[in-house]
Length: 103
Image (cartoon, rainbow, N blue to C red; front, side, top):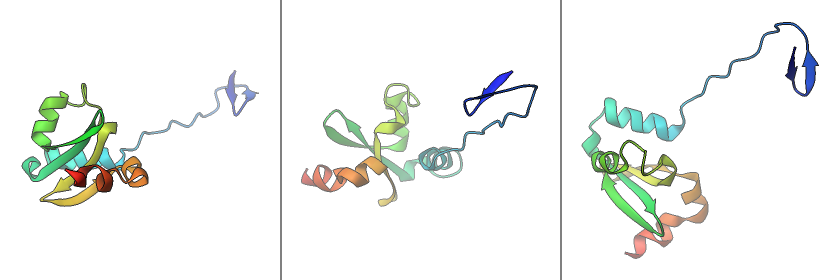
């Protein structure tokens, strides 16, 4: 017996196995690291109350492959200076326009 949608079912009915899809950020970073020139990418991330900008290679070294700096802190990714990724949180709060451009 097992529960499905709050209802107890009998037997070994098929349970849907959900495969986790890669998010846009994960897909972009995977491409940048393994299929493209990683030195072409720049990462802007939140460090407490300020934004920091590093090359992707330096960011990966500093974050120890996202162990010390989680991917959720990434605000923007640029490739050859062109912005190719904004986090949804940055869009809502316009973090880049307010804080980053003031420096």
